[in-house]
Image (cartoon, rainbow, N blue to C red):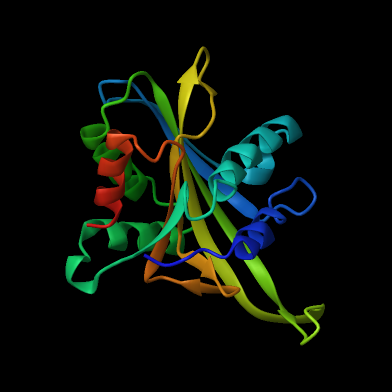
Length: 207
C-alpha cells in the first residue's frame, strides 16, 4: 500500500468548484437497505442547476479530502487478481460513464455485497483535468503535460426525497500520483476505517 501525497489531492479538488469544474458527467443509483435499486440517473453535469452542482461537488470532494493515508488510502491492483472489477472500472472511465449497462453491473455488485442500515445513494463522477506543466520554481506553465481522465465514486446514506448525507465510502480511479495517471492503483475512502461492511466493499474493488 503506497502513500498518498496530500498536494495531489488538493490539486484535484481545486478543479471541483463551480467556476473551475472538471466534471462533465454524473451518474448514480438509489439502493434500498435490501440491496435493490430504486432508481438510477445519468446526466451531463452542466445540466444540473448551480445549487445541484454545488451539492454534488461537495459529495465528490469529501472523498478526496478524507484524512490522507488514514481514511483515504492507496491500494495496488495485483495483476494475478485482475478480474471483472478492474476491467469494469476501466471501461467506465473510458466511456465517460455513458454505458448504463456497465453501471448497472456495478450497482448489482454493491447491492449483493453491502448490507446497509438504510437506503443509500451511489454517485459516480467522470472528470478530465488538463494537467499543466510546472517549471522548476513550481510555477504553472501554459503547456499541458497530459489530460488526466478519471472516475470518482461516493456512497452516501439518503433520507427523505433521496437527500444525500455525508459520504461513507468511495474511490478514485485511476489515481493521480506525481501529477500523472496510474491505472495500476486505486484510492479508497472509508469514513469509518473500522467499519467491517466497508472493508468488504474494498475487497470487491481489489478482486
